[in-house]
Image (cartoon, rainbow, N blue to C red; front, side, top):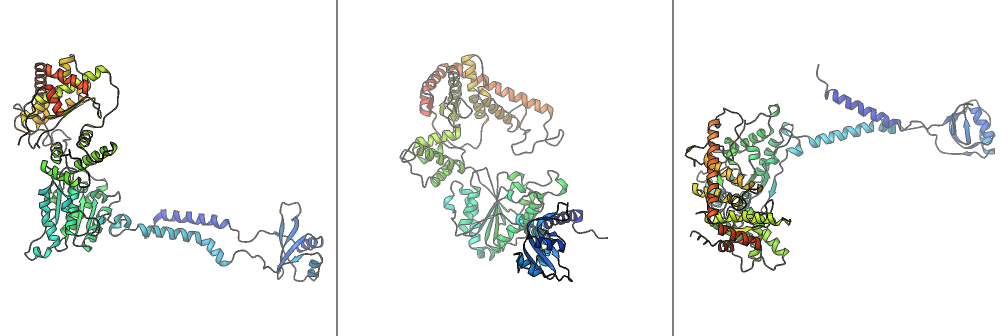
Length: 617
């Protein structure tokens, strides 16, 4: 026997609807409530002058008493409205009696209750309305293939057409290598016949990878702007919903829209949200929404013949965790790495973002680029905005070099805190920062000291800022040991001057431990461990179970810990030795800080009596 549609749940809902319908209908009685009285009682009331008006049709008489009448006697049934039936054999000249007693005889029809249409409407109307509402909601929520909800199954990609404000390669700077890689994509979208005539196929997908803020999204929009084609943009996380099948449905809808608008570009940001390598974890119920979405993307990209004129651009910060099926030829054929800009690149980026900013004569774009190593496009844009805000607060007509300096300090070092510290703690902070700065000046090849301050910023009571003159891409063992010595300078200064240490070196110890551990476990800078990498990198998956491949043995771990301790202790001894040897310079820096609170680069080197190293060519 077949299963009833909807199951028991459906019938319970239907029963509840009928109960609700019965309650509604019960609030509308079918017949008007009148007191049924005998005809003889009616005659008596007419004779007594207690009848105000009557209405009649045939032998049915309805009317209104002037005063309430109780019937039967002794009961609680009393009313002024009544109804009665005149016997067919009566011959009592009733009409004349009504006229004599001044009873109004109406021409209104007798009240007979609800009509058939009104009865049907009250009986079935509520149920019909509720069922119609359910049907409308279900149709609105009904999905396409796979049972996905239509509202959810549609792509949420934002479309940018050529008529909208466009981004071009003129708005992109500092990442010329990545830009050159995408010029061919633009040329194909503009002149596809040139490539098809020679049997060449354009890459179906281009993967942009690199650190956050380097301009991956900006590059993708510039490609669309240069090619003058529709640009469909969305984040990969917008594909995934709790309902299984929605992500795949959105992928189908997105590619269908792009093919209809071809030539077009699809841009998927943060691809790693759905493109992680599959099989890493078990999914609930054996059905993983993320994997279904990834499989649908792979299927859609496989369906490209090269003649549709649709190119998929994707961006990610973690290309190493993507599924290999995405990276094979035929999917994302071309991979473009967007690296942080060098000094010339930063200068170019600054010029782009400074187009609408009025600058004072003392602002040097090249000097700004030199003082911002490691910053990417987003950081530089934020720097310019902070400098403009600072200039506005100070009511400057133009943004000055001092505004940029203060903005850079605010971003790198943190905002100033207005807190009261005791003279003893202020003095200890001055010696602590002087120890950092002095060792930074004395260590060969160390990054130059740019600023020393004992003004509280962020979580720190003081700060020493060092930055290289040129971008560094590789670090030698001696440079790293110098970094450790400089970082331990504050703790060493406290030991030399006060004979004890405080908790102020907490972040310094974390920094030196991290550097020393990577020197030993990842960079092969320890003879005891040797030229092997025994610690996971920042992007490697952690080893959860002992004995799994790649797990560090307990003996090796002990050796790593011993080598890390040795390196840090040797560097601390060297820091103490140098500060004892140059105690006069340490005292001079501390006194200057207590007097001025902040020393810039030139003043710091002058107070310490050390010649500032010349920047390389």
